Length: 524
Image 1: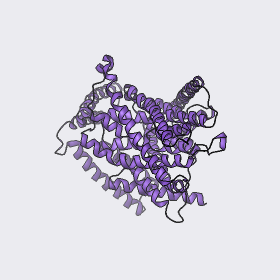
Image 2: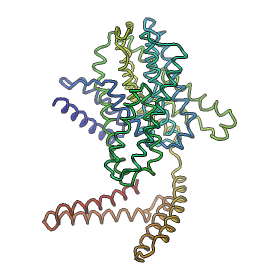
Image 3: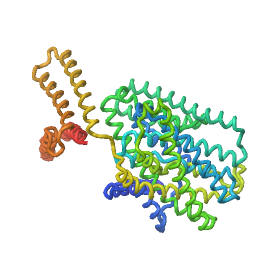
Image 4: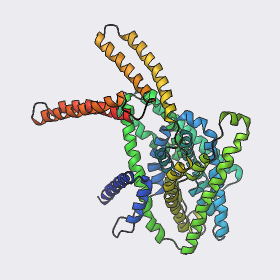
């Protein structure tokens, strides 16, 4: 019973914290992390402990899966070079640089443990980076690069952590064996992700019930991760590949009702998981602080060096990775040279989160699994401190930096023009389909449908017009919402007076709600 009560309390705090963050204009992970840190010092408040397997199997898969579902595969493919440079090259470099710096600072700590810490703090978080990028309104390519990096860097970091722990415990093998293991892990994850994605797509094509569609969608990331873990392959690669494959094909696999319902379900799950995870990170800080045996001066020095190295390595990597590749004529002709402000913003968007939290818990205690003595609690504290510092320093200043440097989202007028052109072609196709199948239909119905197509085409062109006056479609939406409110009141009064049963009210309410939600989507 206490576990259930604690869970409800945590979810409630996460919801309140997220609402407060939206009201104050802050990023929700930052507010919840600070709230958790404050609550951890409240006497009698339950102490939290996150098992790394729970994070890697129960929390991370749906978060990565949803991020992959929402990622544009064509855009991802076009940005694959910078994504791989960040997700693989930068993670490896960061882990090695921090590892050697830590070993110079604390020579008594084994180099393998230092490299493990570097790999733990190397990958930026998928949740916080993309949430801030979308809220700030960064250019679409920048958002794609940040999303792609955070989707793939987890696999690189977790493989490096495993190799470093193997060296720490004496179970490490030669370079060739390590390379084979890395290829097997990543390749196995790729194959498992593709296999289960194809299987899930096959099921979705044959399911007509939206509830069953949602059930299959919810099960997919967990099944993929469990199978990948059982076969000792990369579960992160597997779930990301499955999400990218299915996300690209969702328009052909699911009915409209299933897509709308599944989107709502995933948004809720994502919202709750993100909130609870960052709240738990804050709640664990007190326990981590109390378990440190190293002096506070050494702890502060190590934390400052690691944080500074993370920032320096990312900035030093970004500019050559951005501009040196464009010395190749084929790349230069395909990718225009971005202004220096773009790599600057990408370099600053390096907030850490869930993967760092989970990977830190995998460090073996001294004496266990043949691990020698090393300050495990210090390394765990540094990992947690990096999460807090990156969210507080970079997370709060990224919006300001993007505005200051003038790095804004792509021109909405270009999007509106492209939409209007495609809508015009879609309207012609719709009219042709209407004329082909209109035989025997009442003329009034045909004219009504023809008017609907024309109205949608006009709405698309209106978005290119003036923004300082109310357009016809905006006026339609405003007036229709007032009409829906009036209709809804009449149905409620009729139900209260007993003139219609509850079932009639529910059916009418659903139709009105669907129409109102469609109007809201048009406004958005």
